[in-house]
Image 1 (cartoon, rainbow, N blue to C red):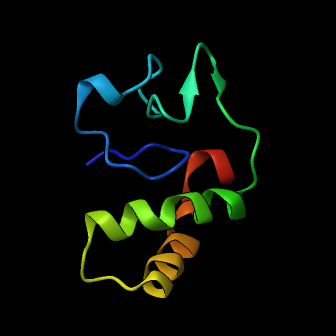
Image 2: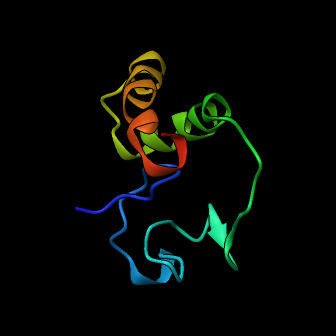
Length: 77
């Protein structure tokens, strides 16, 4: 499975994949990132989304998972 190389969202819906195919439309548009944020800010922005997708995760578990995963993505390396 491919993931957005900024927020980690699974890239499964064609309508949510940006033109360059590496990022979702929520992170990247017209050749640039939509927000100038740090990886720490992205982690905080994604916590609730991860918890919604994985109901078994607590807020702290979601945050810890993101702290491990997001820094491995292209945007944050």
